[in-house]
Amino acid sequence: MKIPFLDLRRMEESLKSRLKSRFSEVLEAGIFSGGKEVETLEGAISDFLQSNYSIACTNGTDALELALRALGIGPGDEVIVPAMTWVSTAEAVVLVGAKPVFWDTDQYGLLRTDWEKAVTPKTKAVIPVHLYGKMVDMNSLMAKAKQHHLFLIEDAAQAFGAFKDEKAAGTWGDVGCLSFYPTKNLGSLGEAGMCLAQDAQISVKIRLLLNHGQPIRDQHELVGRNSRIDTVQAAFLNVMLEDFEQNQSRRKAIAMSYLEAFQNISEMILPEGILAKDHNAHLFVIQTRQRDKLKKFLAEKGIGTAIHYPTILPDMKPYLSVGDFPNARNLANQGLSLPLNPYLREEEVGEIIKMVHSFFKA
Ligand SMILES: Cc1ncc(COP(=O)(O)O)c(C=O)c1O
Image (cartoon, rainbow, N blue to C red; front, side, top):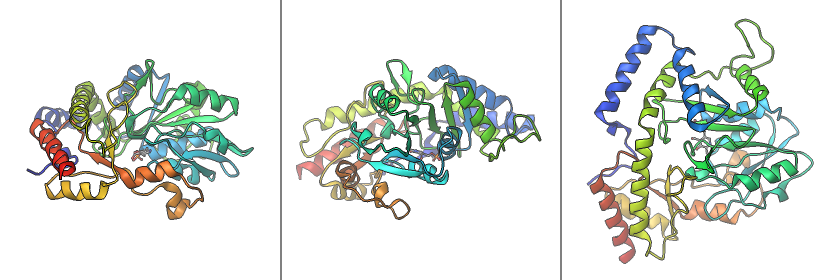
């Protein structure tokens, strides 16, 4: 049996035909940037996440950069970033001319709660990352950010649809950034992202920045850029949203099967709180000292896995920073993502469980 980590060709026929027919509608309408589909997407996401403003853009990395620019962060400023995340979180900080200051995570990859020790007079913002879909404790983080007069940008790229106390990931901070990269829980058929803002002025600034600083055509009020979403991606996302809840239930059911099956394997640490509402079950990351051997063993049995991520940011050439970062480093060395997506078949989940058991018994 060959079990891919994720194979997007497996989308159901009914979904494929809805996507094709929506594509035809866009083609017939002849509007390929902005328009009704973009407005519909922004409205639907505002309703679902209870966000005052939802501003679609080209991708999650641009969303982070737009957020930083909209908040006026730039040269001479420091921004606190977890040592373990996808590279975009720090990349965006460098792109606006500011300095990422890395802080260790907890055992599961979330910014450690003593991050305020990294605050200096130059610190302007903190970017917590809801890594693997699990929300950072935002109540305590917001209180500390407020105390230090820092902006709070949530990197919610992996956490679309996670809620804590009925409040969605991405709607707590000054700006929340989403990615609709195809592998995400809500993924487009290409690149797309979004900024969530709760303040009208910030939302206006983001909209200006992503469209060359124009409130209306040919009136340029500031130096912006082109980070507009493609109409066709917004249209695909509107279709994908129809299946979101159903896909989430499937993800949670698979996560529950794994948790039950692996609870007695003492050599393995399981993801924490993956069934709770503040986790969207984006990734199922286990940790074991035998990570590389397990990955190889599963590959030999035809089971695809992935590592999110093998290198911590302060160890990467463009972001080199001194510091120990023991938890983040541990996760980089021991974390392994097992397949977790709505396209997995029941017998495949059974096979993955069987093979993981057979590895640890041997
Ligand atoms: C934590 C995190 N931040 C930012 C991004 C950037 O999103 P995108 O790939 O849409 O630019 C991603 C997605 O890959 C991510 O996982």
